[in-house]
Image 1: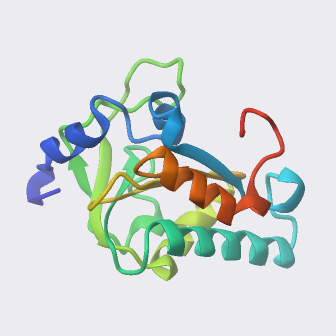
Image 2: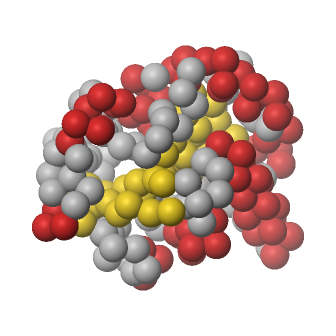
Length: 186
């Protein structure tokens, strides 16, 4: 993603074709690379106290450290209606002209662009964004620039995308305690 809103369209197309950078869209397009973690035990969706927040942050930190690594080159992407929120203020966000326009709801018509920034992955910098996502206030996805790894948190957990089904299966084993008990993995 360059200055003036110009981004590396070829990078996205090679990895994700015409799919939007949203967990539910990537999950439908790449099911063999996907798995989901839950932020809290018993698949509880929202933190209720400090202990829950600690668990949520710790789980996401562990998963991100494993799948994204530390200081890896990534893209942080959010829909147009989120990019000016305070939690994104430390990132140099630009309009992404090459991505399909986003939809606020899967059934809606496209209604605005995505915004993004190139970042060196640092969980501490991302934590304010994660807290807002956990409260269902914003949407965000972090995508490794070097491979097909993506981290798409949502209010209740995160959809994770690994380069292939073998690496996905290894990660699922490592984070078995964070997985859903449902057969569909949701």
